[in-house]
Image (tube, one colour):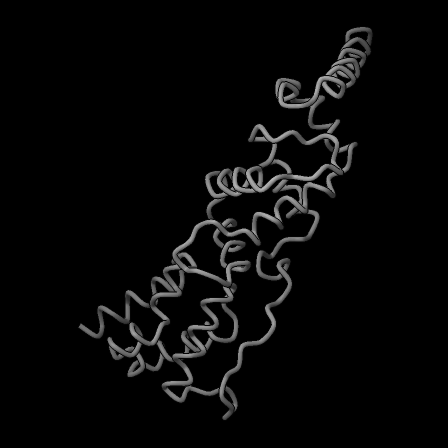
Length: 210
């Protein structure tokens, strides 16, 4: 029984979503199934308390460590400030921004002009599409920003982060996308649609005359 629980714990902590990790590091699971009797499980729990990419997983792992008197260098573990998102995702800020932009372009959210205010409804739409297209990266970001109700999927902090990144997409980048994907222009306002359609026509004319 213990061996089975140990293997399940190791598997979840290695490949599980942040919500799955959250439930197995909780004291009412970890202690209930005597996982503290296994040295490797103790090490994995300690690593989660110190390094997990999800804030709520860290917090619960710390509670369990303290109940079991598992320490770091002889000192009780305390929740520290989370590292930058770039470290958690192993991506540069520019790469994150580009991923968010390309996912936004798979929705019907108007992108131009870039200084406009994105609505809460658009934030939800972007978040849902993100989870659909890139579930692994979404899980990392969802766990990183979630510090509230574990059962809620409406992570407003994440939605705000996604929308905020769209503000930093340059007009040049938006134009470049539409030169290759003019079919998406139907979601933009008429003035920008007309202006960009003219640019595309000019570009195509130059190509034809080469």
